Amino acid sequence: MARSSSGFVAGLTVAAIAAVGFLAYQASASVPDTLGKADTSASPKASASKTPKNTANPKALPTASGAGERVVYSTDDDRVWLVAANNKVQRTFEVTPGTVDPAAGTYAVTTRANTVTGSDGVQIEHVVRFTTVDSIAIGFSAALNGSTAAPDSSKKLGGIRESRTDGDAMWNFATVGVKVVVVQ
Image (cartoon, rainbow, N blue to C red; front, side, top):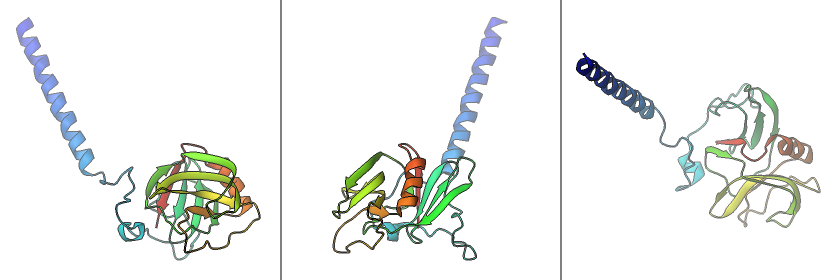
C-alpha cells in the first residue's frame, strides 16, 4: 500500500509541475518583451508606438498608460497626469520638455532635490528624476523665476519644466519609487 501511494504522490507532483510550467509559458507568451524596460537603443520617437489619443478630450488620460498610482508623461502632448492608486486623475497639466526625450516605457522616481541649478543654468526647485538618456538626467522641475520657456535647442537638456504650482503638486505626489509611465 505504501508503495502505490508514493507512486500516486509522485505522479500528482509531476502533473502539478507540468501544469504550472504550462501556465507560466502561456503567461510569458502574452507579456510584451519591453515590459519594465525602456528601449534606449534607438531614437525614442522612432521606436515608440503611438498612444491612442482622445481627440474629443485632449486632457483625458491616455488609455495605454498602465494602472495604479503613477505619473503619466506624454512626450507628444507635453502633458503630465498625476494618477492615484484608484486610477483617478488627481491633476493634469502642460509641461515644457527639454531637448532630450525619454523613451516610452515604465520607470520609477529615482532621486529628488529640493533646489538646485539646472543644466541650463536656471535655479530650479522640486526636481523629480526618473531616468537618464546618454548620461543626461531626465526629470520634472520648476524654475524659481516661474519661467517655462522653451529650452536652448543647441544644448542637450533633460529637464521637463512645469509651473511652480504644478511643481509643488508633482513634488508632493512623486516620491522616490513612484511609477512614471512615458507615452508618446
